Image (cartoon, rainbow, N blue to C red):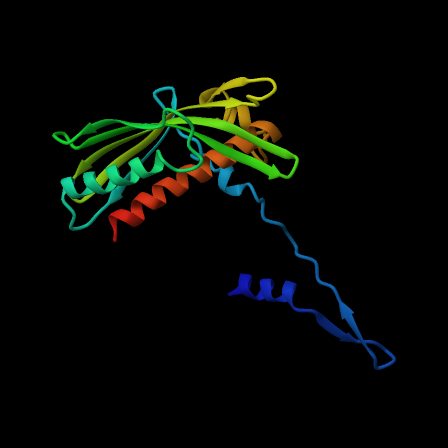
Amino acid sequence: MKRLLIALLTLLPLWASAQDNTWERIEVEPTSKENPDAKYLLPDAVPVIDGKVCWETTIQAPGKSAKQIYDILLKQLTKMTEEPNQIENSIVAVKDSVNLELGTVFHEWLVFKSATFSLDRTQFNYQILVTCADGKADVKLTRITYDYDLERKPTHYLAEEWITDKYCVNKKHTKLYPLSGKFRRKTIDRKDFIFNKFKTLLNE
C-alpha cells in the first residue's frame, strides 16, 4: 500500500497555497529509478551448465499424454523453422516418435536496431532439445553462438565468452557492457518468448 501511495504521488501534481492566497504547483521527483536492466542482471539470468550456456525448464501440461505433447511441440518447432526471421538450414533435425524426443537447430536474425538507413543485427544460432512425458515437457535451449556484422567485418562469438556475467556484466553487477549487453538482452527475450509460447500451447 505504501508503494502504491508513493507511485500516485509521483503521478499527481501537488498543490500548495502561497502567502498571497494563489496556488502554485509543486513538482515531485521520484525518489529512485528502477534499473531497466534488472531482469538481465539476475544471478541466474544466463545459466552455465557443464561449461555451456543452457536454459532448462519443465513445462507442465496437465491432462496431456506424452504423444500429444510431442505432436504439439513438433508442429510448433517446424513452424518456427519457417518464420521470416529464419536463415537457411534451420531444421527439426531429430524427430524420435519412439522416445518422444525432438532436436532442432536454428539460425535466425536477432535485430538490435532497424531504421531506414541503418540495420544492426546478428545471426543467432542455437539448439532446442525436448523430451516429452505424460503431463510435461523438459526443454533446453543451448549451443548458442552469434555471427555479427556479416556485411562488413564478420565476428563469431560463443555465448560462453560473450553474454555470461564474466564477459557482459560490470564488477559491481549494476549494468551490462554496451556491446555484449545488447546480445544478452535479445537472447533472454527470445528465450522467454519461446518458452512462454510452448507453455501457452501445452495449456490450451
